[in-house]
Image 1 (tube, rainbow, N blue to C red):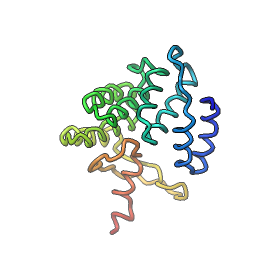
Image 2: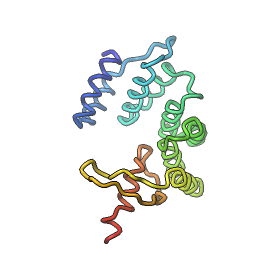
Image 3: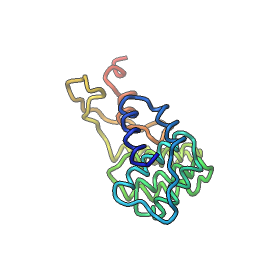
Image 4: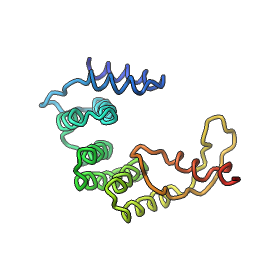
Length: 189
């Protein structure tokens, strides 16, 4: 199956909430990227999408091969560098993971996902002080949320964020952290 076809089918599966089926499909049908043709343009976005799926499916070897062949120059690409850092963490190379994730953060200063991934890596490696420092950076960078937690809520709320006690997932959404710890119904308890 070609990458573009897999991407289109995957988008449909994602929208319909069939994530497990999508990960299985990606693991089974992931194309082998040619060694002499780095991804360009929209291909880069599709390669990153596929690499994230393969990582979620635990296909570490396929992710490494795909990144090395399709995105050999990752040092200036925050998304590719962050994904490479997450992969290095899963491969057991904590030092490389931290170096890559720390490199991704300044490349995308407005993207909380890069800091969340770094905090998650620090937490997994039991680097308590750096993990707490990253959580503090997250709160200083995004001090408030004005979005309602669910689309059905009509009024926007303005409330202070709390520092996450620990970042257990590299794909954590700051809104989830905020509304599970600081939502008005929680305060009322």
